[in-house]
Length: 398
Image (tube, rainbow, N blue to C red):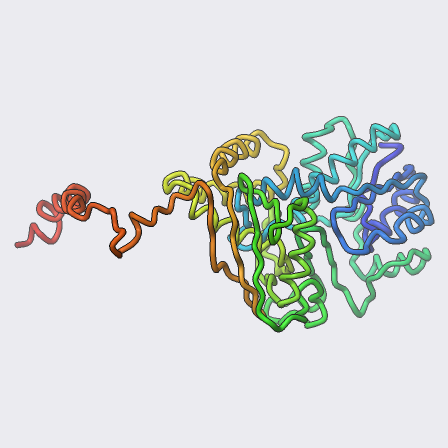
């Protein structure tokens, strides 16, 4: 049994209870690590809560830029949306936090790592498979999975031990947020027929009413500027969360297939992420050759599944990244998007290496397309179908 563990500490209900529970029931020393991956205000007071619960040390890391550059950027380039909808908000932060847990474990001489995930969720997989890849020598502890508490039990335990938490028996929402969005689950939303209460939405609370436009600039598939101003990726995401979210756009309400084999009703807010993905896909339509683009579409679904399933640190993802990087060599340009209440869509795009040729596409006097060539092309293209029809299909019945 490990003697000292590094706990991925969010300051929420489960990890707050886990500190005291591991000390009392497993006899371990606990070092808490809180990671700033862009969540708003949720780290405030974490140090006091962690140490007050009995942790021997507390570390807090600002990982926003690393999160954006090393985890969000590859996902954007890959257009990876799980089940064609979810931009992998929570799935992206877990491998980064696990990596930092391993680093902190080496710093403090810890022989174990721990997380606060339940046995029904995906995050246990993402943390533990990352630990296996990065530090197989460290023991893995999953107190929340093993203690047998219901959510109500955890709230009661926190109250009994004087651990302040935001959850109550009347408001049982579980919220996880970072730069790329916000995930809300539990409570009445566990009924897939029930509409999410208006109060659960925060990032996409509609306040803007007048139409607006913004321009997103990309270099090799990665956003580098907003309205002509060069900014780090994490700042662009934050700015778009506020701008696009103020129009009430960027909500997801879906039933998704969890890695553990169950279907789960999930609600997400990801206005910045979804706007970026929308713009990126559009720019690819202008700059990526057809067959390359079609193969990329086939692979981006596998990429999303890989990340969702906790295999960020895997040779397959490395190989897919290499393919994606080649596909993004010329995905440089600008995309203009328009905003109206509850709407966001592309209204213009341009690129220095655009494959759109006006002289080939136009029907006016500038038309350079050789129309006469089409007759022979169509005959050759349809020759196989014509042969089938004559021998086996409708033509053979004449």
